[in-house]
Length: 273
Image 1 (cartoon, helix red, strand yellow):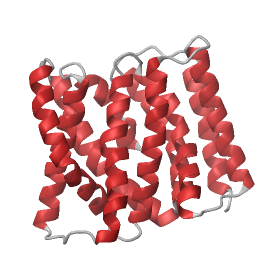
Image 2 (cartoon, one colour; image 1 turned 120 degrees about the vertical axis):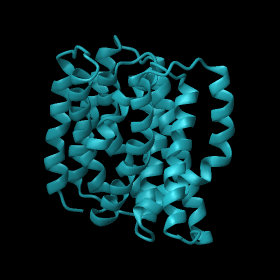
Image 3 (cartoon, helix red, strand yellow; image 1 turned 45 degrees about the vertical axis):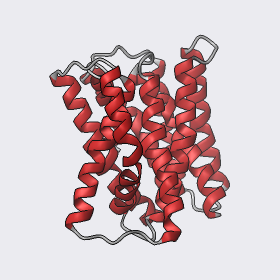
Image 4 (cartoon, one colour; image 1 turned 180 degrees about the vertical axis):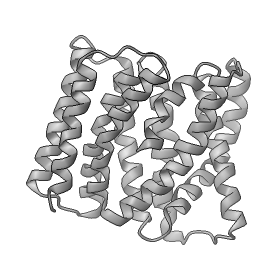
């Protein structure tokens, strides 16, 4: 969660020097180079044929879809607002998990998860003046596609190490991300600064690879539904970084909503399936 909580602030820094398409494509290429180097160094064999469809879902959701949609959203949305909206990710991940793996969390689990989701939706509508913005639509789309990627990655992590799941998903995207990065870097302006380079390096190495390694391992250990609810802590951490690193001014509703969904963590973690 610490690694993921820095994703939005790092993306905001990256957008200071890169266009959205450049930032997402280059971060994916850099992460794939790191992952590919590890796979080659350890002589990891290719995944079994039955796993490639699942890896494609991880690639579409976690490597491409979520980074692209959230980066587009952060062009007009604050990181604090985006962080609270993404508080819905645990619920969407639990829903996808139930459909994909057949898990059946308890009624208490669902009640707590829905309460956290309701708090996030209320915050979003209130902050948007009663109507959803384009950035909100990007964020909600990102939630759905990322939940699918998390669920499939968590399932695959039961068959192979978590770092190999995200590693192969990143490598799988190279035929697309390399040409997109080349075109985007020529089409969008690039201004290298300390912030933009630091932001790019973090989202590539920290968010896109290292964070997902331990995340998928955790999901395989304690189960997808319960692991997903730990992500309710992410908005609070991101709110802290948005103030500390970006100097954003938080509306009172932001920390209150984040605390409300954080309370749901204790309930969902105590609820048994």
